[in-house]
Structure formats: structure tokens, C-alpha cells
Length: 438
Image (cartoon, rainbow, N blue to C red; front, top):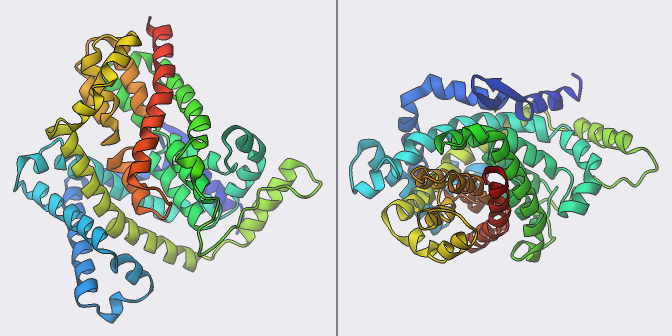
């Protein structure tokens, strides 16, 4: 088989946009949406079952310790610390309570547990199922090496990051921010990014997809300004991607690589040959050394198990808790008080109503649009929509993925990065909003 065929398929599935009706999607996204439609109303039940199985096997592993659960990958998956057991227990409890609609309303409400079980969990299940099997086509057969070598110099100069991080950003843009995080995590664990690079890429390049941007712009009533809206998001996001990695806490991250594998970077052109030719040679060498079908299948199955039994319970627990804080407590309102005079000074109408929407995105990426939907000022709605797209650190999704990954980021660091991105992108968005809308 042609060694470059898997990369070609990977590009087609992850990086080539397709127009499907009124939305834009990627091949893998279309496959996930199709599976989502086929399974339909059974997906919340499937998600709840998976979370209960995850907790059950974890407790069996810790309390009984049978030999079959204490071997290799299964031991890594279910023999975990007390804190992670508690998170899996919370995730399973929240899912069962929400599915059967029993327990306190603030947990099972449509805006908290309902969002996680009925909206987010089905998307994650279907998206990650295909991502686990198909991502090797993109990352293990030379395409990352080709792009990394080709754009290494400009990416190092502009962002201080490896060229291959361009793939993470493009996959996020075309598909989903979670795909970007998944690619970054795998590249870090394979030794292609050091700790600082992986942390910077995951928190600055896992951008919101075009499809989700279309949804937000339509929901918030600015779809007639979509081109201007998305252009503003790109400009503000690029500025933040240049500045944030150069500030603490990201700038203080270690340059050490993931210890089990060490450094495997091959982007530097040390030969006196043309850039394109060198990039092709590096890509071909990587394709020749790619794992065989059996190893790829085994790795994909473990990834599916790790995502379903390890990641989704964590996302469910953290996401539900974050949504409870946002919907049923005044925490984000209190935190946003200092934003009112800032928004007033920037000339935004209805600043008091808009202030909570500037910070509530830390809990979930769709919440700012929900809060801003009732604001009359088109300028203010435009600013909130753009800001929600550029903040990137959403605990119901990207934040939970990062905490579960082996990339060394802590919760307080994620909140600090969220605030930094807010502080950097807000003035840019407001200026562009005044220029576009007046």
C-alpha cells in the first residue's frame, strides 16, 4: 500500500471542510453526526451505562483487585487515585440522577445535568469514537512531520511553537476544539512537544470550530454579520496566541519532554536541501516507520476505552459542577462586578447585563451566548459572542480534557490563562465591534 495514502485519508477526514446544508463540517464530523442520528435518544442511556460501568470496574479494581484488572492497560485505566475515583463516582451519580430525573433540581435541570447528558455526552461519545480510530491516519504517517518541517520557522518566530502545531489548530478550526486537544495530547505523549509547548498549544490553538461559531452567531442573532464576526475571532485569537504563551504561567513551564518517551522532534533541516524536499523526506521516513494495522487497532481500542471510561466521567462531573455554579449560584455574577466599569468605559451598552457573560464561559462555551441572548444592543451581543469564541478554556469540555491528560496543567493555571485571554482579546474585539457596527 502507498505509504502516503493514510495521510491523504487523514487530511480528507480531518482538515477538508464540507458544506452540509447550512453548516460546514469535516468528514469525521459527518460520520459522528450520522452515528448520533442513528443512535438518537439511546445515547443518554448509553452514556449513563458507560459511566456506571467505569465506576463499577474502578471499585472492583481497588477493592478486590482481580488479576485480569491489574494487567497493563486495564491497570492504568482502573487502578487510579482516590480523587479520580471520586470524580468518576460523581459523574456516574449525576448521569443516573439526570437520566431518571431523581434528586435535587439543580443537578438534574435541563441547564445543568441535562446539558451534559443530552447535549454534550452524545457528541463526545460519537466524536471520540471515530477520532480514536481515525486520528492515527493524520498523526502517524508523516503528515505532521511534513507540515512541521514546512512551517517550522514562521511558527517558531511568531508563536515560539513547533510547526506541527499548525495541524492542531486547523483540525480544531475545521472540526472541534476537543479534536485539537486530543491531537496535542497524543503528540505530547509521543515526544513531539515538550511540556511548555504542549500546554501552550492546547490552551491557545484548540480553537472553536466554524460549525459551532455558526451556531452561536445564529443563536445570538448576529448571523447576518458572520463573516465580520469570525474575522474578529481570528484576529483576536491570533494576537492572544502570540502573547499568552510568552506570559506566566505558560512561559514558566518546563522544556522537559514526556519522560517515558523523551524527545523525538524531527523538524530541523540540517541538510543542504530545499525545504519542500526535506519536508517530504522527513514525512516519508515517518510513514515507513509507522505502526502496523494490529498495533494501530490495539492502540485505538485502548484510546476508546480510556476516553469512554476515563475521560467522559471526568468531563461529566466537572462540567455539571461548573454549570451548577453558573446557573444556581451568584459566583460568576460576583466575579464579574469589576467588569461593569470596564465595559462602561469601553462604550458597551447594557454593561451590567453583559458583565457575567464575560466570565461565565469558563464553565461552558455556550453559556455566554445564553446570557447575552436577551441583550438588546447588537454591539454588546457581537462582543460577547466573539469573546466566548476566543476564551477557549471551557471546563465542561476543553478544561476537563486537559486536566485528565498527561499535559501538566493545573486548574488554577487554566483559570489564569482564561483571564489572560479575556484581558487580551476583549479590547481588540470591542475596537473591531465599534468599527464594524458603530
